[in-house]
Length: 322
Image (cartoon, rainbow, N blue to C red; front, side, top):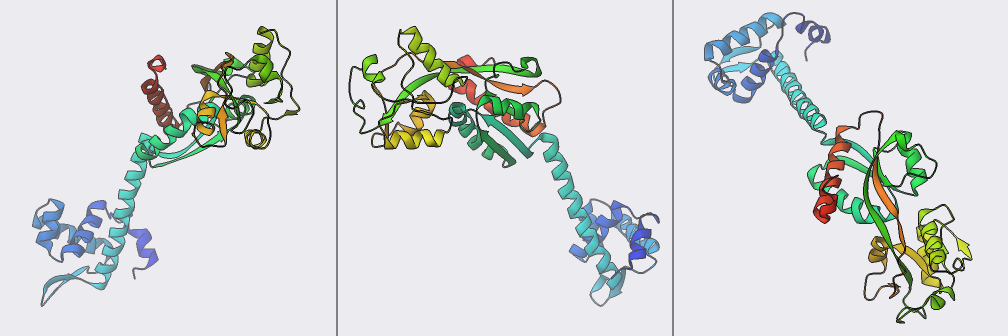
């Protein structure tokens, strides 16, 4: 084992990477000529490097034996350390390169429910293959919560709406799409297979909606008013998607859901939920990709955002200007 004080003095005495490479190569080949060939240098240059190492260490690092030339105990200890150092340097170079290219790191994304299913989910699958060392955290929540998280630096970007009264100048917004709305009920609901459906049919049942001020609820109330009807019956107000699904399965309630969400949870021919065969023309205001104006987005997040843009461009040419 090499003395720790000697370790501290080696660099001061002139130990270089070329010496470490020579010791590692000589340990691998047990032959000066082969070590020189592996390093792309001449044999005299390799011998000179070994001599310099011995001068720096103050001990012989190689000796002649019946089998030719081999490392001494000091030489073996130094060669072992040299191999570790070179490996660490190779790993460091790869890590620096990965960070430089944004292929490692952690990315935090927020989305309202529809784009979380329709956009973020396939993008995460694609990013796992393109950047396997990037960890992606996804939060699904209402726009006002996500907006606050974005401005607070806890999200790299979000796919949501700018809340009413929020400082829109603090973000860059790239509008993506509006949200058409479908009406969902349980499969055994009295209206599940009825066609055509009238407004009178729809107003005879309770509706599950989030509270006023939430875009989905506001869109429903506005459409009912446009059609000359009072707001739908609403015994329960909730923004919980899971509670909404549970109520749909256990009651005759009607729930308006974005078409993307409805396709996921009421699209199977034998599923528990179905979409009603009617279109009231309800559409929620468009959501956007929102990023902070202040501060630079980490490269890993920019790489994932680029995948989002590519996905949208492939899915619909109207997104190609993003």
